[in-house]
Length: 257
Image (cartoon, rainbow, N blue to C red; front, side):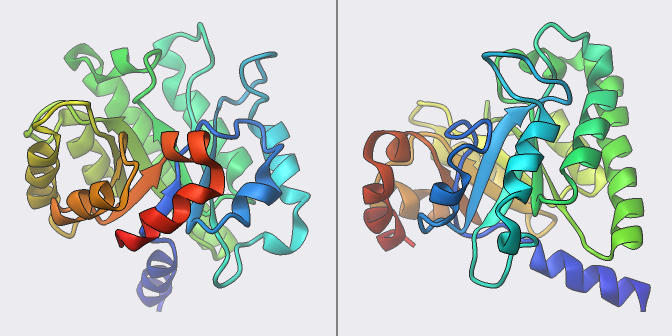
């Protein structure tokens, strides 16, 4: 019974085909607008446990704003999923990664449909270096284990995703760690390089059905959407297109689906 219950929860947490990437709204001030824009999911943040004035409001303040939306939480059928991107505070020691991620998960749990642990930001990319492999493995396992306990206690499941740069055709060590920890999706930031779709295809083949593969970066048209999906992405996130065009970007993007 427990296995069937968890499997049912897992099916409800899959990321949709088209989502709005993090960075458009860091503090939840535009939450009502963005959640009604027509995306399947909207990601808020990146935030850290403690507020940093002028940079990010902290997880608690963001959660409070999202919770004020009331009837949207938990997400109802046909409404946009809520994602919260979690990261390290500026200047924090890399060794604090596990504690920051754990605190963020615990604070975001009541309102999030999925959590994105962000290793794509420049400040967090040092964590991808081989010398930090043990630290990253522990941090991923810590949040995965906490998710398992909270899922049983609260009878709802929040999806876990790892956001990281796509830097070559070989599945990165961080990606492999996330899959081993039971993460539900990898959100990969496509580089502005001609090989990017070939690399995305190689990752998709390696991942197979173990997790979702969501592509973000440089996706501005229906052609870009189709190309990423044909390369093996199971979902798309957009950022620049919405920042430049607002909701007018949706129609051509949806046509690509």
